[in-house]
Image 1: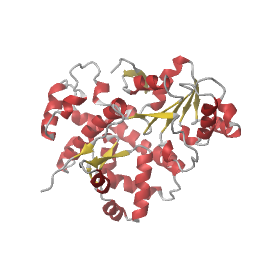
Image 2: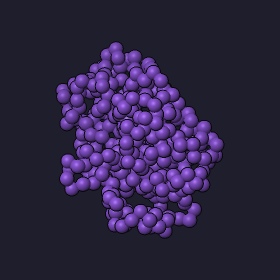
Image 3: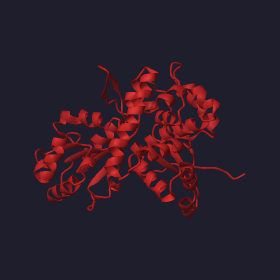
Image 4: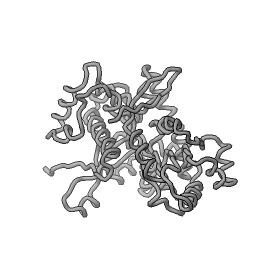
Length: 355
């Protein structure tokens, strides 16, 4: 991992945190006309692309209503203000993607557009034209162990983890190689979303998670869907959080949530589109079996999953039998973050035997 850093600001304080995506973004900007940095809200996408502004890129934030208004009036002129443009939160103005396609097709050069999004733009229903062949994606995850402990040369490599034969040995291995001051349990509780991880006050962290959920419901969900009953969706979130690292049974969670099966499917699509969860498919040599067998549900942030479950401490998690699932979720998340940014063509599966 190259020694690039981004600046994370919080409550008047600054802390440098290495991110594994920065070197990937810089590499892609030299090869592709459009680079998209995507991921859940508050994973550090904006901070990452602002760090690239030293390359004299024009930065346009679509959190500013004025920019959206200008973009809607004349998308082509809006985008042609500079040779290299960074657009933050592009899902707020999906019509710009068609204009980007026109500009790229007219004059194709590497690094023309760097865009960020808290929603998977390939899943937006309003997009009629594709950027296939013109765009490459870099997915942002919450902080990983390797990022918060960059000075530790003995931090386990990807292959070191894969060589371990069991979950128990993996746990023991991770415990042995970390400094005594580092607690995996605490990291799971805090999660890796930068503001939550850097917050030292537990009560304030809960307040932040509460605000995160409200912002997510009021912005991302409303932007992408016509859900009328947000309480129904939030209840679904909490029930799904209880099933982190467990085999997905859509009919069961639909029944427990008191919603139709089709509505549950729509809610799953929203969670995937906003990068709140990802699916871990079962491993079978027969690819056909993989497609029909149920995946496991993994949350993109364990701190958020704990908050949605109402767990106040690691002791609560152990008492309710949630600790094993949270550890499995965290391990899968660490490996997935590494794979996506280092070996993007690879896949992660879960494997189980039948008794």
